[in-house]
Amino acid sequence: MTDFLETHGLLGITIGLCTFLIIGLFHPLVIKGEYYMGQRCNWLFLLGGIICTIATFMTSSVFWSAVLGVTACSCFWSILEVKQQRERVRKGWYPKRETKKQQEKV
Image (tube, rainbow, N blue to C red; front, top):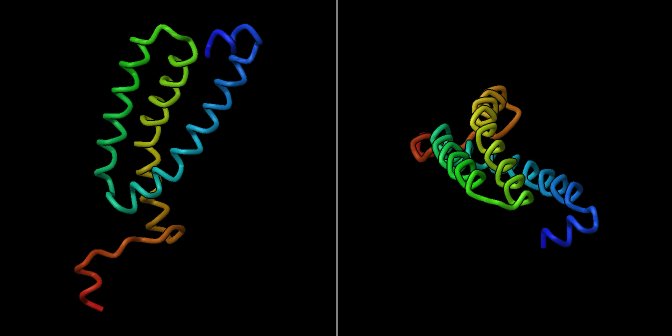
């Protein structure tokens, strides 16, 4: 697949498209992760980032190395975004998940 992309000069635009899709995928992951898991989802993003970083160094294909690198950076960036999402929830911009204890009080 990468040979076809390189031969026809499509490698750069394909990497760009994959980058766009990966970043777009991580936006709802951060929102849902903070909603259901709180700060604990940071560990998943850290683990995913480390795994993708290691895989980037082990991959010989430029395309897959770039995609894994973008995914790793998105995972690491999501750790910061979860903290910012928590602040957005505190301000009331996003809904806060009620725990079972909070639901029982009502």
